[in-house]
Each structure stands twice: as C-alpha cells, then as structure tokens.
Length: 488
Ligand SMILES: Cc1cc2nc3c(=O)[nH]c(=O)nc-3n(C[C@H](O)[C@H](O)[C@H](O)COP(=O)(O)OP(=O)(O)OC[C@H]3O[C@@H](n4cnc5c(N)ncnc54)[C@H](O)[C@@H]3O)c2cc1C
Ligand SMILES: *[C@@H]1O[C@H](CO)[C@@H](O)[C@H](O)[C@H]1NC(C)=O
Ligand SMILES: *[C@@H]1O[C@H](CO)[C@@H](O)[C@H](O)[C@H]1NC(C)=O
Ligand SMILES: *[C@@H]1O[C@H](CO)[C@@H](O)[C@H](O)[C@H]1NC(C)=O
Ligand SMILES: *[C@@H]1O[C@H](CO)[C@@H](O)[C@H](O)[C@H]1NC(C)=O
Ligand SMILES: *[C@@H]1O[C@H](CO)[C@@H](O)[C@H](O)[C@H]1NC(C)=O
Ligand SMILES: *[C@@H]1O[C@H](CO)[C@@H](O)[C@H](O)[C@H]1NC(C)=O
Ligand SMILES: CC(=O)N[C@H]1CO[C@H](CO)[C@@H](O)[C@@H]1O
Image (spheres, rainbow, N blue to C red):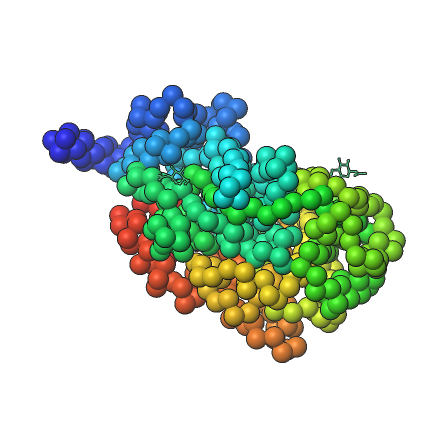
C-alpha cells in the first residue's frame, strides 16, 4: 500500500516538473483526468462545449462565473472524497457550488476544477425526530416543496432560486428568523467530506468544534453533502409582493411604523428601494409575510393602502410566497455589500433612499445598465437569542439587522468603480447610524452580504483564533484554501 503511494508521489514530482514548462493549466487538466478515472458511475466530469459544463459554471451574477478547466458533478459523498484527494495532491484550485448565488467573484468558481453539487437533491423527513435531511445541491424552493406534504417547514430563503448550501453555511436570514433564529440555529447536523476524503457527521456531540465552525464558516473545513434541519409545523401563510413607484415617503413611513410597532415574531417585511436605469424608473418592492393564513387585523394596512403598480398578496403555501418574488439577475454583473444595523429610524431610511438617487445621478451616464438596490430587512433585535455558539455571528449580544446593498451593471470595465462606490456608500450609512447613537462602527458584517476585500476581522472578529484551530485540526494541509471564499 505504502509502495503504491510512494510511486504515486514520484509521478507527482515529474508532474510538477512538466508544469514548470507547460503552465499550471496542464496540472488542472491532469486533475480532471485523474478525477474522471477515479470516480464511480454515480458521478461525471464535463468539459467545455457541453451543456452540463455551462450549467455547472453558471452563477446568478455574471461576474461570479469563471470558465473552469472541467466540471465535476459528484453523486456520492465517497466520490466527493476522491475528488478532494486528487485536488489536494495536485494542488489544483477548485470551486464548490451550491446554487451559485454568491456575488463575490471566485467564491464558488475557479479556473481549475468546478465541483457542482447539483446531484445532492434529496429532501427527506424523519417525522419522529422532526428533522429534514437536505442535500447540498438543493435550492430552497425544492425543500419547501418536499416538506409541504408533511405540513412542516424550515427556516430558509426568502427568494426563489437560492442555494441551501451557501445560505446555511453563512448564517441564513429568513422570514422565520424572528420565530426561530438564523438557519444555522436550526441545523442539528452536517454530513461533511473532509480534505482527507473521510466522511463524518458534525453535531453538538460528534465533532462539536467542526459543528461550531460550519455554522457560518462556509468551505474552510470540507464539503458538506447533507444538512440536517429542525422542522416546524407549517400552515398556509399570508403575504406576497407590492411594487410601487415614486411614493417613497409613504413607503418610508409605513416601513418605520411597522418596525416601531410590530413585535409579533410571525410577521416580517422586506422593503427594497431600487433604481433601474434600463427603464429609467424608481421601483420600490415590498414583501409582506405572516406565518398564518390570516394576519392580525390592521397589521399591514399602511402597505396595502399604498398606490401600487402591482400587487400579488394572498393566503398561499410557503413555496407560493417564495415564487411570487422577482429577483432575476438579468444576466448582469452584480455585487452585494452590507451595513450591520441595530435599529432603524426615519432619518436612516431617508438617507438610504437618498443613496439610490445620489449614486444613480453620479453613475448613470457612465455605467451601462445600472441597477441599484438598497434592501431594508427590519427583523427583531432578539434574532440571535434562538441559538448559541457559532462561527458567525462572533457575538450574540446584539441582534444584527443587515441592510443589503446590491448593484448590477453590464461592463467589466466598471467592476472596480462599483466595488469602491458600494464600500463608500456603506461607510456613509454607517456614519449616519453612528451619529444617531448606534454603536455599529466595528460591528461584524454578515458574510453572505459582505463584499470581497472585507477583512476577516470585520466578519469573524474574536472567533478567528478558535476557527483557525478548528481548521488546523480538520484541514492540516490547507487543501480548502485552493477554493475561494472567506478564508481563515
Ligand atoms: C436573489 C438573492 C436573494 C438572497 N436572499 C437572501 C436572504 O433572504 N437571506 C440570506 O441570508 N441570504 C440571502 N442571499 C444571500 C445568499 O445567502 C448567498 O448568496 C448564499 O451564499 C447563496 O448560497 P448558494 O449555495 O446559492 O451560493 P454558492 O455561490 O454556490 O456558494 C456560496 C459559498 O458557499 C460555499 N459552498 C457552497 N456549497 C458548499 C458545500 N456543499 N460545502 C462547503 N461549501 C459550500 C461556496 O464554495 C461559496 O464560498 C440572497 C442572495 C441572492 C442572490
Ligand atoms: C466561457 O466560455 C464561453 C464559450 O466559449 C464564452 O461564451 C464565455 O464568454 C466565457 N465566459 C467567461 C466568464 O469567460
Ligand atoms: C450522518 O448521520 C446521518 C443521520 O443520522 C446518517 O444517516 C449518516 O449515515 C451519517 N453519516 C456518517 C458518515 O456517519
Ligand atoms: C425618483 O425619485 C426621486 C425622489 O426620490 C425623484 O426626484 C426622481 O425624479 C424620480 N425619478 C424618476 C425617473 O422618476
Ligand atoms: C403571483 O405569484 C404566483 C406565484 O406564487 C404566480 O404564479 C402568479 O403569476 C403571480 N401573479 C401575478 C399577477 O404576478
Ligand atoms: C445624499 O447622499 C450623498 C452621498 O452619500 C450625501 O453626500 C448627501 O449629503 C446626501 N443628501 C441628503 C439630503 O441626505
Ligand atoms: C464604465 O464602463 C463603460 C463601458 O465599458 C466605460 O465606457 C466607462 O469608462 C467605465 N467607467 C468607469 C469609471 O469605470
Ligand atoms: C485593495 C484590495 O485588497 N484589493 C483586492 C480585492 O480583492 C481582489 C480579488 O480578491 C484582489 O485581487 C485585490 O488585490
């Protein structure tokens, strides 16, 4: 056995010698071939000019897509282990894609080997334990659909199409977070393939430090194949979408009043202030949500009374609510960024609306197909009281209400400019909140919204030393650093 391994290492040495002259792409191609030879018939490798290759590489935001050397769709956890062994031994860069919704370039894409988890689509339900087993290739739509027959639900995405994997591994803000916390607060276990190729479970009692690390720590330790999520009873819900244009004062008033007065954890809203240069319009979209077939009398009246251009509100299934959302990326480039708020005020909401107008004025003539969106997500400040001890947030003392900033545009020539503007805009709004007395100048940023080039300290803060210890234990040869993302 050891002799075989030694021979393999010897050939690796000659491989590296080849790479000196042929360039790194040569190694990537060798890695693709080694993977294709090693995996079972449950899995497949795809090369350019195939439909699967294009799908495996494609991302929600065009700027997140990179053409890899090959893609691989593993079908079993054991094959994921073989793939990781080849990638680690050949030191080939790789991407791990759930549903590809990250807006940070290179976080789930690569010029090397793209791993697409699309074959892990199981949704199972253990009625006795009240736990759902959810494969890492699922989007939340499939999970809601799969659990509907059992009249149970989970704490998941608010918009159609989002991946379970990245969403959960980064935290997960849901319409149900007021009731049950972040998605990570409902995870009872992860099945994960370590860089050694070994498949383990991480729970509160089995590999507890890995369990801690995966709750917010993304792909730093290995590749998750199954998420085990606590379920809750699910009836029909009430809610949907209202779209308005040019009544932002009324929207600000309704949003602030809801934030000030509604403490019912079954209720949630999202207010997004948008400017779409392709149609030259201010578009404000609100999602209303109540976790019962009928909301309490009057709770949403200020929203329902707005002059709107479109409304899609009803008593419906949870899945139907998600399907009513309109969040297409329109084939544009896109970044997210964020401000971690503790509170909302009318002054702050007006400053947010002003940002959409100010930056459209500055950028519109120079940035083709500009789309600007500031998404107000006013959850209850008690949101962190439902869970304990996770990689993110580094402190559960104050609930973080992340403002989501989203810009889209067409030309790669504008990438750097947009990154700078988004950072500047977030800093400006941070100052407005600080001036109002919110102690948020250094508050941890939500990793699923923070823009690339945010420092690790700004996200994981005091948890970093502990997370680096967990990483050293489970990934001693730093194989996972060959994959992009927030790196410990
Ligand atoms: C339209 C839209 C709406 C959104 N709404 C919300 C919202 O309501 N609440 C919220 O909290 N967030 C929201 N997000 C942000 C979302 O949580 C992140 O984009 C999330 O990372 C998406 O997960 P994904 O699997 O699609 O992403 P991917 O791009 O596939 O992956 C993201 C990261 O996770 C890693 N990863 C993926 N799969 C695995 C795996 N199996 N094992 C280990 N690492 C893995 C990737 O390598 C990458 O670093 C939204 C995003 C979009 C685009
Ligand atoms: C990937 O390759 C395809 C086909 O050659 C090409 O159309 C596309 O622009 C490439 N994408 C990127 C991001 O390089
Ligand atoms: C992980 O736990 C699940 C559920 O208990 C079990 O079915 C699975 O076999 C476990 N995997 C490993 C690698 O132990
Ligand atoms: C968008 O709204 C702002 C005020 O918030 C207004 O000044 C502007 O004219 C509106 N733009 C369009 C194109 O309607
Ligand atoms: C309302 O949302 C549902 C999905 O839940 C969709 O099928 C329907 O077409 C939408 N109606 C309108 C008028 O947009
Ligand atoms: C609007 O935003 C810009 C840029 O952040 C800022 O300089 C300006 O003072 C703001 N105006 C108002 C009225 O808030
Ligand atoms: C933005 O991109 C456009 C289109 O390529 C280009 O004309 C313009 O100079 C760019 N501006 C900046 C500041 O990036
Ligand atoms: C200023 C800075 O840190 N820039 C970096 C931002 O991120 C990109 C991509 O990860 C790097 O290439 C830049 O150097």
